Length: 68
Image (cartoon, rainbow, N blue to C red):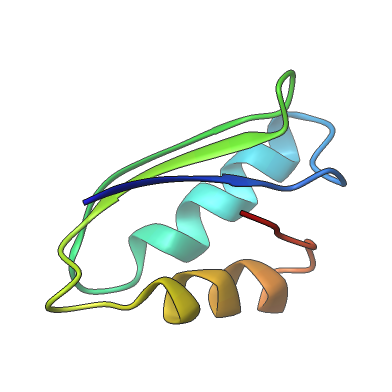
């Protein structure tokens, strides 16, 4: 499954790396790309292994607000 989330407070490459690292630590993530220019986070994942709420949770724990 592919989902695109928005993190309006992502503003730089450090933010990008922080978000990508946090999401990649979850099981079931096949790809993640955070783009600070567009504020979009594109995530490919196995919804049978990890839920969207889990993904949002680690992004919030990393210090970023996230919306669909």
